[in-house]
Image (cartoon, rainbow over all chains, first blue to last red; front, side, top):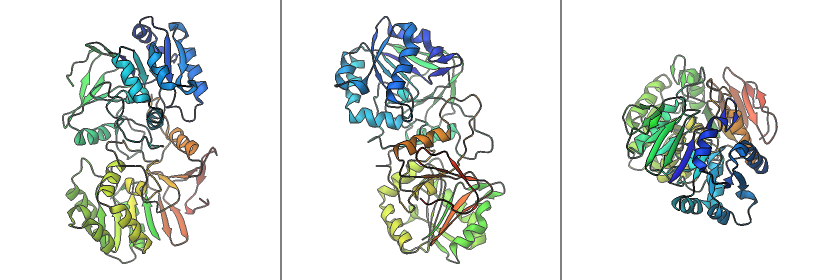
Length: 231
Length: 231
């Protein structure tokens, strides 16, 4: 299995720029990518696919978006790479389920097709979308997702709050999840971080510590390098 | 219909203290309240009911929590007031649906029982929970909710972001909802504000401007006083 799961898309020097080398390494010379733009809501899907294509020019990856495919499942299964962009996770899951893409992506990844996701795309790789930060703007027909990994990711992880706001902090929200599901850990990936899975190798990358939440344990800080926890 | 829908529970001087006079006015001398604690996740439901009871001592309202009732639907239908507390909206809806409380509450409110909600409780009063800020930690069995009002509420409304965070702002999230559902407006209630509905009277209260989101219109600022929009 070859997964690259980014917290977010936008680095200080531009779109996907912070992960350019990681994406080149992940793609391993493969070029034909199926792109899933369905997390885009206010963003037009053609524009979204173009933006991703532009960002990936240096890697020689060529993007074909599933929303333009006559047979989206077939596009997934016949592509050398699968890329799932960020946006709204509920919208993404709603359309993937509607088009039968969940099974197609699972099948492709099981057969060795590398999978890249960021933000909502990383949420989709998890057992469920229960640890997304997004607003439930549309019914996704169930919260179960791809299950490419056995734990949850919380992208854009931070425990900071805007001044004067009394709503729940991120840690409180994640504690609610791990109270209900003590069997399912959550990896909090701050902006700029990512998880790379290549066969048995599982590594954290990026400038910040990541965080691990499980059951009623105190959140555990994880440095970049091999994932030091056993989900 | 007699509704009091608060953005949040905690004012600067304590739990529910900012809305003490509004609650006294809303209850109109009725005393027996059914309390719905199911938005509580890490908070024990007995503790939650006690905390609400303590806060309501000055109003003479007596709280009976539905989680202790042998017949929760009957408790709702036989009480003089219905109170739904905040916490996680998905957890709240999950348990209300499981126990058949949605129809019971709708029936009680239609028969004139005053309804008080805050945060997740205010989300529950809306057509759907699509504009909650909460994490989808459990499957609510569908996003449809009580539909006591014809528009959505976004509680804890703010467009502020923690420094350095690149995720979506609240306005971007709400714009995604109104893009998908241009027919359903959203009332953004900042901390400390509330909406009172008493028969034909609909009023905004609290120290801040509230905000109205509809379709692709610019967000509209609403001052305290009669609701100046026609949903």
